[in-house]
Length: 88
Image (cartoon, rainbow, N blue to C red; front, top):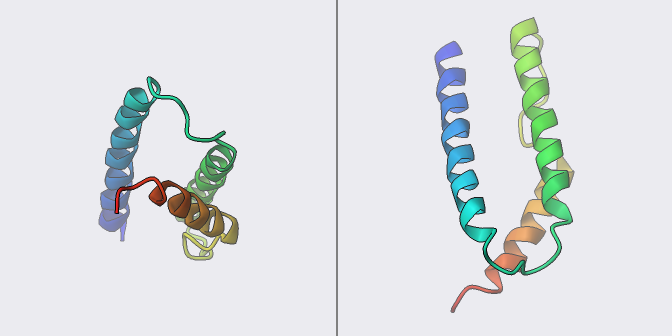
């Protein structure tokens, strides 16, 4: 189980680097819309990760990750919004 957690944490770190690199590129572009959902989604995600790591250290079971309806609905809305700009 520890090896699985290490692998998952490493993958999250890799994705964080990819996102950070893309943010630097996009900072030179005009925003498509105000970033209302993204900060809230980031806060909820950090809270979920913190809770998961605390539960792991304490050996306490918690609800599965991704169980936040707020993140799920915000992510769905955000993906649909940005997909509308993609060429068909």
